[in-house]
Length: 316
Image (tube, rainbow, N blue to C red; front, side, top):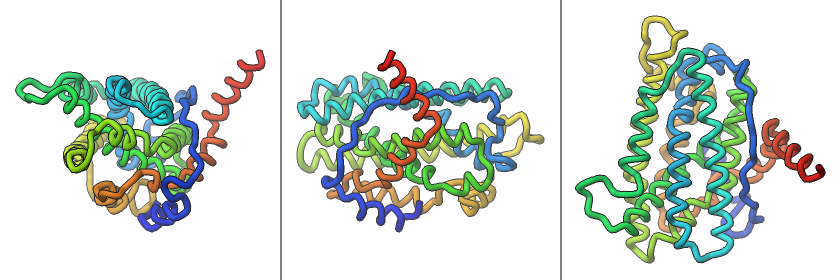
């Protein structure tokens, strides 16, 4: 989706005036048996750039849930509390489903453990319940900082979620239908709960300038770390891909070629998410298209199967 498209969606769905969508986890499942390693045919770079999601999200989304659980006692708004619990349920499900993709990659001789151990260290140790040794910061302030990081990450996941829902280039390229459903189901839920992490931070992050300054710091830390981890992850996957001969390296030229084909978001789409987020008046309810997300969730094969199972259980 272009920046102009995002602006159009914003005008269509202004903050604070639309319907409030209930946020609840969908107990989806996916069958990976027939999904090839290069699930975008003849596009290993695009495939692996997107596959970095599977490396980052299992540990990252478990961490989201842990941090939000720490923050629950601070939530005094009943509607926000309900949304936060729905967010936690969705993120826990995302973590599990992306973990299954890692198992599928390993079964195809692409083991990711030498990379994901660093992701685990980032979230479990450096950003764990206690600050790293040598950083004297009060417990409440450490919680607020980590909430600001989650809000910043969720800005990017909302942008990526809206992009994948509109990425017709993936369909034209013949991308694997199961992987597309995973990505679009996940992307739709990211748009669905796009404002929850931001609202949680605003609610728990204090008042006035310190709250805004901490939000800026959260993005200043998050954006470069995400860029580094993503580039490193893509390079790792390409270098260890058993179907690519000669131990090739990640190529920016190949990446940009995939962007031109509509297989990856543009640098402008990703980069423009940062200045939008840094506006004092910003709110994520203006990010992406909720209508498109809800429409996809109504047609997603995995989401429909999950809803049908719930319906059958209710009738039993």
